[in-house]
Image 1 (spheres, rainbow, N blue to C red):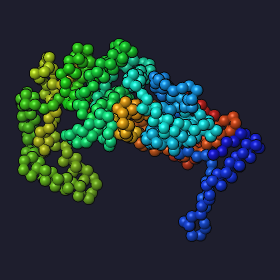
Image 2: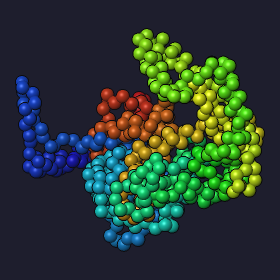
Image 3: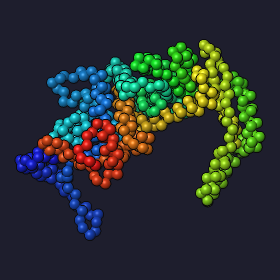
Image 4: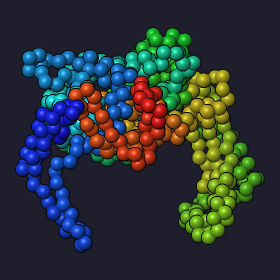
Length: 505
């Protein structure tokens, strides 16, 4: 590594001496790859980092103070005179590593000398001391207490409110869980059957309608979908309404969140909801006339369905095969459109109360009839000012966005919850949550289609950037290749995050 002190000759001499030391420590190589001329390899190159996009993340942190606020909520039990890495540096280092795709604690040993990561946390890139090692980071994880984890969860919501100084007219909260498979003896990692069939944790996530993460709470593997949802909702609604008293809040979730107490609390506290409802015979009775009407309408418009009854699946696969065997592209597209367009949709709307419910509630029934027969979906809601079709299509169906948001947070490799203690794994999940929010902040500053880019694609195009780092006495110069294809977008995002222009680009 090199450090230039302007044009100081002594600095150049020390640099050349260090180069010679490096050459003595790691000898040169000759590879026989090209027949016409030898290939030589030496280990005395310039200071290079492959994570140049961490500068964007550092600029986002400088502007929004997400990690600084999180570090302030942690208690440091270490002796002051022995501290080499404050908690902000440790937490931000881990978050930067997660964003760069190095989520394991052991990666700290390999990246602690990375000049860009050092600069992002506030240290000099070349002359600055190395960042925290793996044992230091492991102690950070294992030293957390429940009060600290609760404060970090609160900070996620407080940060969301701080980033929205103008009160939104309405706010939609999407609840869902996600399975994290475990491969060890982690505390509270239990076996769960059904579609999962593995030892796992089952965290609860809450996003807003735009994909901003508000809650990431780790749950034991055998907890149901609705477990912890009501306590989280109570605290979340109380904090949001304390900041925005008149905001309209709507909760969306799938049928796994069927719970009488969940419904009752939202009814009593004027929280709107549109939640999936599991099938039962009483619901089938209420929707019988609507289902019969949809069947008659389909038969009248398209004739008898083609893919029901014995051999229906084989006939469907044969029809798909015929469509995809069509050579002409336009004919193939038209044949596929004709195959999937044979559908009748209708809605039913009625009042229903299960035995455990305290009152009758509005149930919306969506009925689709196509060549495969009936497909029925039920939703329970307290939204009265919209039609059944509007509740289903304009409110409930848009909850599919949370699946994309969970996919994005999975791309931070949050599945690596390998600590033996539950609290340490909860802290690690929150680190991934902070990484997701910072990436979300950067993505919002990009333009055009980049605002819908996945986290993994964002990492490939805007984080994994090879850069050369030159540290001089009065400045640090970071050089990005002129062939970098996203240079203009990188510059635009940096300016929106507070960077200043030196010369016109």
